Image 1 (tube, rainbow, N blue to C red):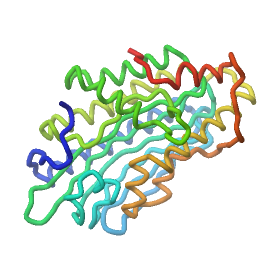
Image 2: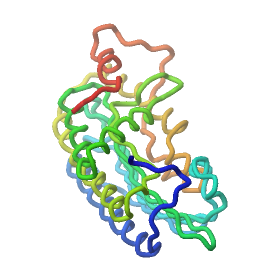
Image 3: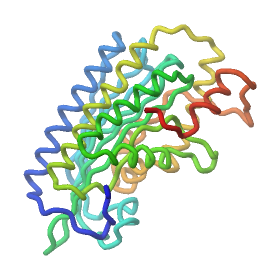
Amino acid sequence: MINKTASEKPQAINPELSVSSVKQFLLDLQNRICRCIEQEDGKALFVEDKWEHKEGGGGLTRVLSEGSVIEKAGVNFSHVHGKQLPQAATARRPELANSTFQALGVSVVIHPLNPYVPTSHFNVRFILVEKMDQPPYWWFGGGFDLTPYYGFMEDCSHWHQMAKAACDPFGDKVYPHYKQWADQYFFLKHRNEQRGIGGIFFDDLNEWPFETCFAFMRSVGEHFLKAYQPIVARRKHQNFTKSERDFQLYRRGRYVEFNLLYDRGTLFGLQSGGRTESILMSLPPLVAWQYDWRPVQGSAEADLYEIYLTPRQWV
């Protein structure tokens, strides 16, 4: 068993020390991810925007735009306080309604210019909820997933090999469970389509002791860079046509639809009164919708739907 029900109580922790440890790791992770993206792009640099949350805390939003490889990347750190846990969280744990909370996380979305380089998403978060006269309630969540526009078997296999490597030290059932959860989560119900090839997704993680859960979150963060950087390096110099760029913009529309309709992090941020500019940094700079578009049979675009946007075992 990997996750408990939301009503079960996690291990008691020292809230102040736990938050401090998680925050230190997340800030360092944000720095390392930004350095990696800047090195792969070779031209553009991140611009940092520091902000404060109205109920306490705040964050550091970093955005890179109009690079030679990356059209837009957002790497956001946030640590916010709130007086009432948002509906996105209390729907699964109603007993925590009207509780104060702290939410810490790093979220990353990378939209490359070249359609042969896939879009990538990563986030990890830690939620601490405190209710008067009760021990604190906490959980971890996050994961990473890949959204290719033109599929390559070796890229997909590598991505999932790194996802599996992140999970393997924590048990042989962890990767299959979180891989399946990602396949189910990153699904556009109204389109009956997968968003991409998935990866891993986890939430409500507090079954293990705090240190084990925290170690798992760190492992996911470490393996995100190992998963994505080689793919960018391999594909970023590949020539592409205007029609391939148009297809990329069309498929980005699916990304926008998912983030605004289903994404838990987006909903949590908006419901908690978070900073809208930082929450919506995940949206691509350019996107297009076409009415009732269909791929040409036998084309690379058709292959994306028929081969890559179908859940399968990649490793």
